[in-house]
Image (cartoon, rainbow, N blue to C red; front, side, top):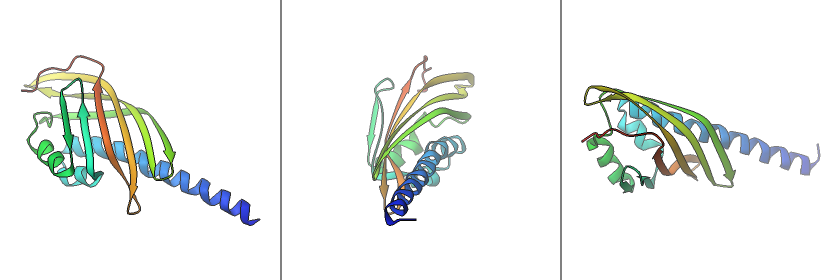
Length: 147
């Protein structure tokens, strides 16, 4: 192999590894929310992360505020199951974007509930690991009140 071929192969392997690592972040998010594993949830976000939803009217910035929100929000329901599908990822160096459809089922005020929508992500490689730096949550079906 020539040096050029080795260089191209190395870039392709790095890209595939990035896609694999990034692809695990949305699934980790869903599992951590469903199991109420706040430590695992916080580990996948950058320190300056943002989670927002125009539809649900919230915008949380910074890991400390995210931690507080995830531990006090009514969106952390006693029973929840998230499923994600059709994950698309685009990697450009140490940043990436992605989106996926989500299906949520759980109980809101002890009433079985299902909500569908789209997650939009921005990822960044920090200290050798990919993190979520922005998560936008946009339901596409009616959302019951969780107050």
